[in-house]
Length: 262
Image (cartoon, rainbow, N blue to C red; front, side, top):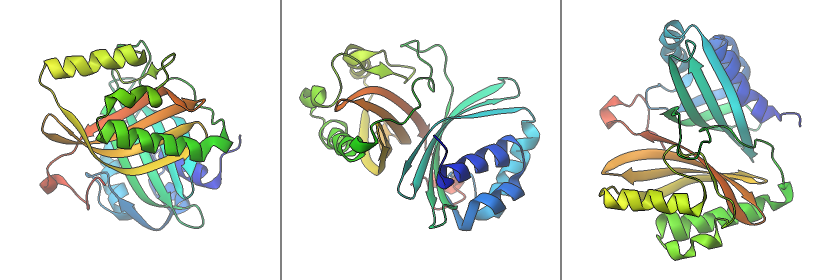
């Protein structure tokens, strides 16, 4: 499938601007009249982007950046990205959400960045797995199902309803600390409880979907710390069958260079 103008612009800013180091050209080509930034270390605008990434590019002359999957919903584009810097010296997984204007140009950006971990409990990596968008006619139904999962399970804590949402026969897991299936998920929750750890979804700030993929961007309280989460769900026949996530602890407000993570 040919990329839409919005996905082309999001990929272009990432790959041409950061991977290839052509920041100014990419910003001029792919961003709109404003560029509001929520990556807390980066100031708003094109100038903030260049200010942040100039030393980044100098520190990391070898940049392997791969956009693994993209999702488009109205004016929003989501990108799930793997980065290897300096031949694997550092490896990151990034989840990025872009808002676009009427011309498809990028005007706002949110992200969550996590270290790439291997090995994992499931043997699946944090980024591998299906990428193809299917079941476009089921987009709305799948978004409704994930909204129910948010309301009943993630925020409501009604774990007795979990099989209303997650398949009992397939639940492929990409969180490095969680095994496959509902059994793997149950073991993870048991380990958290036994160690006194806590996790609470406080608010889901954005829910977007396209076909068989739905993404939520959430504010989470974990062990007393504030985190930002992106959760990516793949659905089949009205149930969740696969899950990826990216988690980042939010730094103190006095370290922010913009209005904040959300």
